[in-house]
Amino acid sequence: MKMRRVFFAFISLILMLSLVGCNSNLVDNNLSDATSQVESKTVSYDDIELSEKQQNSIAMLNYLAMVSQNIESSKNNRIYLEEVYSSLLNNTNPVIDEKTQGHLQTMLDIIEDYRQIQLKRDRLNYIYEQDKANSIKNAMPNPLAVLSVVESFSWQKLVATVAYTAVSSYTNYKSANDALDKQFMIDGWELDDKETENIHKNRTRTFN
Image 1 (cartoon, rainbow, N blue to C red):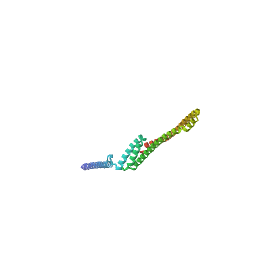
Image 2 (cartoon, rainbow, N blue to C red):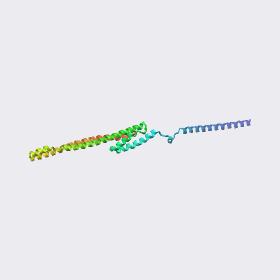
Image 3 (spheres, helix red, strand yellow):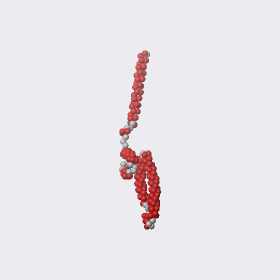
Image 4 (cartoon, rainbow, N blue to C red):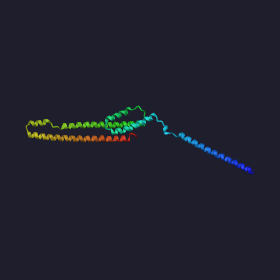
């Protein structure tokens, strides 16, 4: 009877050890499977390959960022603005994504605004110089009026006429110049405001 109990106890111990070993192997297998699944789903950024369109888009965005800085420092250089505008306009071969195309179009609009502002400044300066020259011409006294006084052989009338003509010419010239300067300043302010708006647009809207 005692031998039977010892035998059954020995058998029970063997069964318990077998169950513990099986459970340990099961846990190890499950952990190994889970690790394999995580590793299979983990993607390294080094393994990501960009498409040609994505590469072109990144290159174009970098170029536009450089252009954005350059045109702000050279906004009064019409030759440079025209060269950059033509370069961007003709550079249509690389395929870029829709968002980058939007940035490109925005940059073209900004450059065109700078070109138009500078063109208007040049025209404004030209008109101002022409009006200045005309104001001098218009302020000159009428020689026929002076000759008519000289023919009268009246020195008193001649002196009075010359003095009046000189004062009148100076007054007219000063009045005309003051009006020209005021209008030139107002027109210049309007262009300054447009240029400020364009600078703001260049800084805030280019890559939004």
